[in-house]
Image (cartoon, rainbow, N blue to C red; front, side, top):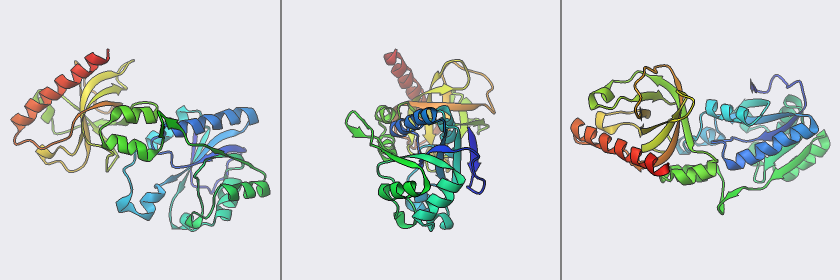
Length: 308
């Protein structure tokens, strides 16, 4: 998949296009992208995505913006895996926010992305003050020679799939519900970095994974699987949070992989969160923390045994 930053350089080939933030790339997004890929084969067009950085809600109200489910790298990896041929990342700034709906279509969709067929969610709005809607897109499509279709909402077990619903599930610690909405376990990936080596002192060596999610959509202790070290995922237990007992500030992901003792500094791992064991908490001293970590590891092992 080719990635373009900004819309100053037009794509050389016509596209079947979708537009959105695609935070988390959940089941609803996947249904839309599958439709896009199918159309691309039928119409012999390049399947392309237009997305924004930062998220518009981060631009308009940064203090109230929700935690991201996926950072840009994770999102691009998932879009590529779903067969997209190109993704254009438009910087969401004051100039883009003030672009009229008609200019948005003319400058970006037609000129930069050579759109021939557009697939959008049924609640999509665009342009200055969200003035553009599906009806206006159909009108402008007729003027510029592209077709427009809307995807209806996707439900799972009677629940409408959305990024907000996934965040609610993660915040509540309901990893099973989050997995249903996402179509897979929730995943955070990152590079293994050097830490303070406290895990060794506690008897549980951990992989400290640097993450760019800040804030994180959830905190706590989880039973996890780790991909990137073997031909199959490895089970373990992880803490995601600020580590209040040792005075942490920035979120960190620490993973203890069961029955594993290799030097993996620099490795890029994907951590799948399967089940929440408890909330993150502050302990009175290191001995109390060590005792709780042993209980957490035991609980995670028991979870995997039950899942066999």
